[in-house]
Structures are given as C-alpha cells and as structure tokens.
Length: 264
Image (cartoon, rainbow, N blue to C red; front, top):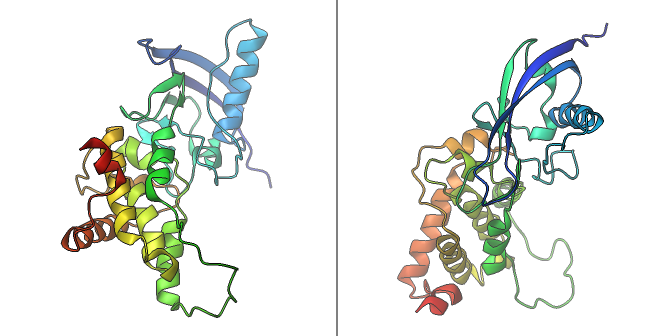
C-alpha cells in the first residue's frame, strides 16, 4: 500500500545575488509536495512555480543526484545535508518532514566557501588542497598484477573507509572553526594505508596542511561535528592519523613542503 502524502511546507530560503551581496532569507509557501520527492525535486517544483510567475528561480548546486558527487550542499534547519545521517541532500526525502513544517535552507557557511549565488558556493579550496598533494605521482611503470603487492584486509579496509569521502564540504560547514580536517584527514589516510602512497607521505601531509592554512580553514576543535554530518560517515580517526603523519614528517625533517617554501 502506498504511503505517499502531500505536504504543505513553508520554506525560508537564503537568496544572495553574489559574494558581495548581503543576502537574506525569503519565505515561500509550497503546497502539494509529495512525500516521495527528494529534497532537490521539491526545489525543482518550487523553481517551476517561480518561473511560471515570472520570478527568478533559486540557484542550487547538483549533478549526479545519486549521493556520489557532493555538489548538493545545503544546510537544512541548521544541519548540513539535513536531519538524516549518512545521506546527501539529494538523498534526503520529503517523508522526513511533516505537513505544515517550516524549513530553513541556506548555503554552506565558511570563509573558504564564498557564495556564488543563493545556495551555490565555490568549494574550489578543497580542490586546491588535493592539487597540493592529495595524489600519488611516483612513476611505477606498467600496471602490476593485482596480487603482486600484498595488502592486508585491515589496511585495505582502512584505506577504503577514507576513500569514501566525496569532498562535499559538510565537515567544514558543521565546524564552528570552519576546519577541513576531516576532508584533509581522509585524503591523507587513504594513501597512508597503501604501499603506493608511502613514498610521498611526508610531503603530502605537509603540502596539504600548508594549503589548508592558505585557504583560511580553521583548526580542528575535536568536537566531532564533522563526523556526525558526513554523508559517507568518514570516521574521525582519520584526523588523528593526519596529525600523526604530520608529526612524523616533522621528526624526519621533511615537514616543510613546497607550499611553505612559497611563503618563506
């Protein structure tokens, strides 16, 4: 038996023309929302009605709508990606809300994520952190046989847990310090547990942490808000691994990466 129901919602949506505009919340009355819709489909309905009335639609970011790209970054009633754990905004369904509910929707808030328009922010800072060292660049020749380099299941699982990060930035939006430590830790951890990533381990963590400072991300407050809102449930242990890697690089005298040298 179908459990579909129609909801009548009151939305408070953040509207902002560009990064220099002050912006503010605009209230929208949205009746006839199917409980089977996703949150983004509900916004599609809102935008169709705005266009029909000759008003400008709400700008929001999305791509795959399958929870794997991380672009659907919205803060819903104060929580990045909304009230359900382990899902992105596009995976959040309207059955999570009740008829007559007021919903406040705003963009991810961080000085490192300038607003492009309305609910769209520029998260290029995360890409620049990856470019600073979140990769393996050593030349390994042709692809080896799959079983040529034995890796224990424990290490492989730890690497895969960290590699699940989709770079959405919810960790940054949830942190009162605007820290990207969970994202950064995931990039470090996924290579730390694989032999291919060990050659550049010291330069990787030093360069990425230096870039995080340049981008204006804050320091980790160790309060685990990031873990609570991460749609891929990345464990907070990756932050501890990141700092251990950084200390190890300091003790070996290799903590000054190319990003530091640019500033000195």
